[in-house]
Image (cartoon, rainbow, N blue to C red; front, top):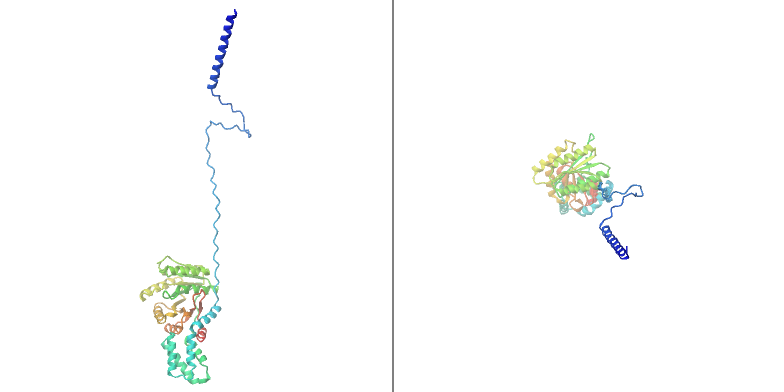
Length: 386
């Protein structure tokens, strides 16, 4: 083979090689490399999950609720310890001396004159009548004073005579004990009556305090259901000394509330149930029907042991009219005179006792929670005389 032919052959071979090389690169570029076999394991010896395998959904993780601090439990209010009877009587003398002393001083000034003529005795009568003693008791007192001072003359002290006659007029022989105990294991039941504005609901709360001070267990019945304010007021009194108050919705039948209160007292074995009644006085017939029904319903559970009539001492003759109406409706067994400390008309004690034939058992001395005291004729007269 000559040299020319060999050269041509070499050039052709080189060309073929170049074409093959270029074609191989193009094919290599177009082909994607396949996935490598998954043969390795993780650190726990478990092959990793196949990325193309379906994913299994598990239940969602539990929601973690944020911790909520428990609400603080409010502390029960500290119960008040009511004042005892002895200190109440001390304050009775002090309060009455301040408000009623003018009456006693006026009478003593007249009786201490050198000459007791008719004009002086008329002035004494006027002083007593102005203090609401009443006509008949005034005449009786003046007659007795005239007789004693004329017979005994200068041998007696005018103050001593006046004190003795006033005490007799107030009548210390009346039984002024509160009948707050029942029989046969049943509680005593105290029914409190009177017109609105006389301090009836407040008096119920204050009586409860007196009984709690004597370590007696008490339930209150809020049967004045026509005044929501009265029910709320009584509930507040009960809370202050830890006494349960039985109440109903506004407008509830008062007799049903009274019944439930006494039933609760019987079931729990308490010493005393005090029932606050409605104080409306539109007409005597309506009042009689309502109070009569309340009392009848109560006595299906336990006898009523005390009926207290609350009177405002400042109302004078108007209070006497109220007293007469209530005495005709219910069997009043005792009287509570409120606002006596703010009035110089303490003679109503004598007048109302004479009118109803029942004793004044409690007197209100002011606005304080413990300003209600058992009535003492001697303390009352001493306060009148200063």
